[in-house]
Image (cartoon, rainbow, N blue to C red):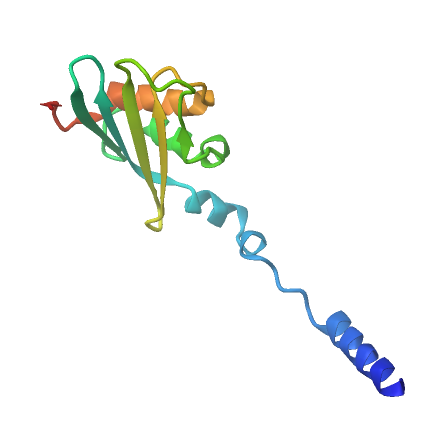
Length: 142
């Protein structure tokens, strides 16, 4: 019994005296956290519609007017998005969107949705801005 108590006391003493290790999220400063979520490139793949079109739009830091969608894609609201927002009824000739955002450091976030689906407004705002200012890599009929 004494050996068990001594072992518990030793473990507790070590736990109390050992400095706490910060989690990676806590270890980053606000400046590092901001740079970690800085979007550097957005690719929007859009396909479907009545004509069955496929388009790809690209926005990066050199795109005229691209600062706003890049800033929105780096926001906490965008980072909290799920990977997919799909309609309850996948009918009709709607556009399907796949948004791939690349962040400083090379990591990516991909979000997919379909036109008219209930999704957070930040997703639709980024899609609209990328279509408006992005460089269209061309439409290809299927």
